[in-house]
Length: 448
Image (cartoon, rainbow, N blue to C red; front, side):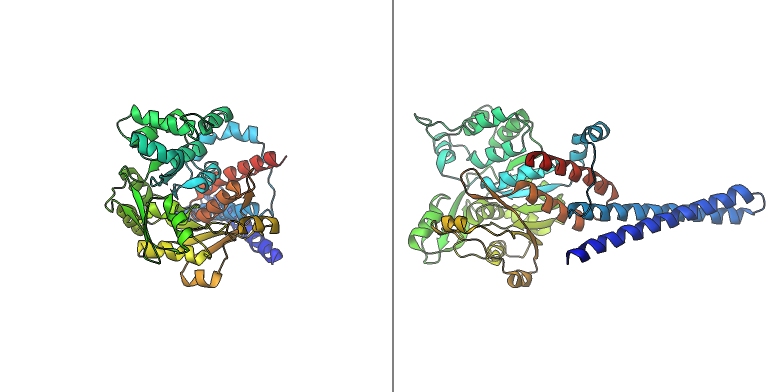
């Protein structure tokens, strides 16, 4: 199968080279005829050869475009190694200029999964908009929400840091949690955003100001400025309020979540978030907790309407492991059906799933916490008219927990966008050629 995968793009490369040669022959022949025998021809013959020149130029344009596309496929699949001097490339093409011309990507969700993905995506484009849930009511964010009456800063802080261009020491400072005292377990970054909220007209402006201070690539936007809270109805009829209470109560009662709602129901989305959704090339849902990170954003009525109208490709990044109290026993299709049921329509075009085997030791560790790998049930996913994209996405953090590999996940997302959305855009294809090479060099440096 791998041989066939190599042959198909390889044959295309040869075909497009021949097409380009044919275009050059057209031009050469016509120019020779015009220059050598121009006096012998009438004006109509001269126009005919000019037409041949234009045709040849068009053929070369098509061949060059398709050749670049085929080359990128070979490079991304590892069949072709291209070495580019990064310093020389940096002198020719400024990184920021490339990133500004990257695809418009909107990511929707919350939690650590979202910020992990953003670290990879920012290496391809600066046109990133992260729309982040503000339903969190636990931990340090919950304390600040209760004490100061501000929207929870935790998820937004993580996304800002993921997209920021800061020194490691600054990031370490903003992630620092006080070990004891009245500020015990409180993050300095949360306090920073809370202070910024105090000197800003509203929370939206505070997020923008913090983003400017930290030189953020793209934008981070709270999904709403309303004091949004979650309400879940379990299968046994129990109603649970509060984001942090929902999975705990569902686990204790051994009753799965039947329906999720937001309060207030008429929470208003930010105009900037809606504009980003409507103008996006691609929208990514997740990764993150299905009910408490992804769905809350989709239940804001204006966001739901925009997702149904947008021409963008919509991709869901499936979690690697099930989550106790939220997705116990869920397969990939179950995640998709929950989103469809809450939105009312099937909006998802692609689902990205992990295809890498998890070690037995890690499985046992998660099984002790009532969590198992999410099963990929392709037949059921196909019935939902969603295309499956498999990749080896596993990464293990320093605490021994499963996470998505940010670099691999980002490259998979970009490849989907290039293949399905930007296929005929020659300019972007050329830019992504350089970006993909630069990312490969960064990966090689990390491995070394």
